[in-house]
Length: 210
Image 1 (cartoon, rainbow, N blue to C red):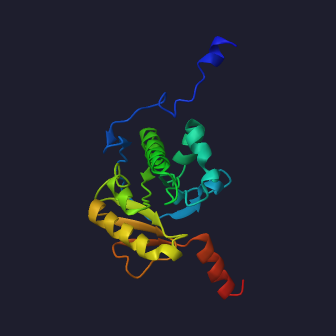
Image 2 (cartoon, rainbow, N blue to C red):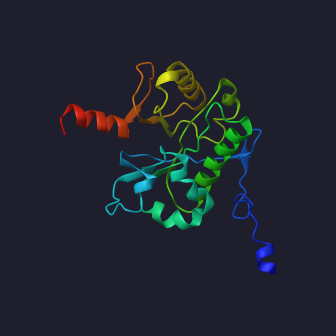
Image 3 (tube, rainbow, N blue to C red):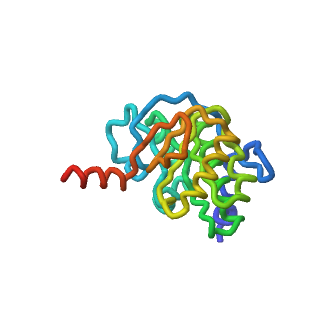
């Protein structure tokens, strides 16, 4: 075993940067960004997209499609800098996940966002929550009175819980603009910018007979 191999260990990106954190779990802080409307595309299409002017990258995808950003963030910095905005990666915080995994995914989201901002990427924070007790930490590290992004995709069977979390977000963060990916429940208020999900686009195309 070579000495070089001996020291190639996985430090969960702590060898790259450790940021001043917020809350009990030292969640890295995402700085607010001035926002203008853009067309949002998924991270899985970021590399193939040639015309990147007035476009932003979202991570409302299955985690396996973007976990590589966490594992090799430097590989993607220049690519993401070529877009107007990039949402923070939406690592899942499912209610049936162990609490430790939910907090770990919240931390990973914020570490990547802080690292990208440090390297010149304009990051919009993606807000997510799980159970009621997640409100104790799921808003840590998010900017107040700024632009945020959320998704309602997959929440149709738990819409009451989604609205409870949405209202908690409003009370805690007072967002100036809410980029909303997916169907918007009538109960959700605020300065909302709607982004159609893939399912909505497919449904609209089917109605038009495309």
